[in-house]
Image (cartoon, rainbow, N blue to C red; front, top):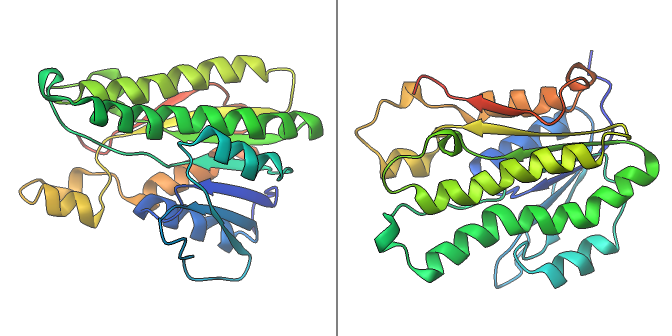
Length: 227
């Protein structure tokens, strides 16, 4: 039996390895899914039944307001848009820092500003951010990345407090290395079996948005694999 899910789901960062897995999960559960994508050519990804694509630059506040100010009624929002840069503090450029803050933190804030009022209006919402376990103990070369994701953790906690009076939950999952083809290519000598698979992480995210996850609110959930 399928869980009693609400039907209108937004997946931001839907084209990535994790995002596409999440899209499939909710489509298979019978939901109407909206996935964001961004490219300069505006070429839309392949169409699928019950999946609507939204072209938007999530780091542009005016664009986010224009697109999502005109849309309302999302029941669930999974924010897995994000980026990564590895560099020591002295090697981190202004461009790298802006990239990480814009994509990992500001995009989530801009979207929350537009989506939460609609959830409050109908007194229902399920929000899950994809943060990083590096926020709990960043190593060498992770300062800028971990700082941008740590901001997402604080956003989770603060937003959870703001919506306590409503049937809205806000949580973050904190994975380690996700087992994607890109990560395997960049780290070919690592033990991939210790990483977290997109399917495993998707199952956890999905559970948080079902009735099973109703009591979980304001949580930062490490998903460490075996690292």
